[in-house]
Amino acid sequence: MARNRLNLTARGGETNLAVPLEPRLLRAEFRARTWRAADGSLLQGFVGTGGFRLTTGNCLARICAASECSDDGWPVYKCSDGRKRKMSVTDFVTAVFDGVPYRRLSAPPPKE
Image (tube, rainbow, N blue to C red; front, side, top):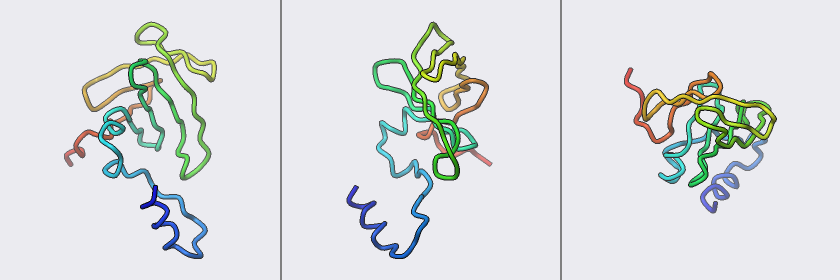
């Protein structure tokens, strides 16, 4: 927190202080349980519960919404927004939730 506060105070007069999520700066256990979609949406796993927080949209670039999803019998999850969503996992790196592919933050960068 102190590092972020120092970075923000060094930007006197700036009005846009939003910065993109930097996976390399996050704690390893957080990166291991977080996936990000191409549009900036996040899927964050809860330790020990089997549930997820789904944040759709990119909170830094535009409006976003979050809902909590709990296991309703694999592969279905019941979410706090009243919807049921399906999950599939293609490999350690990729999860597909409600038809949207998410990439694990702790995964090595894709080869190009």
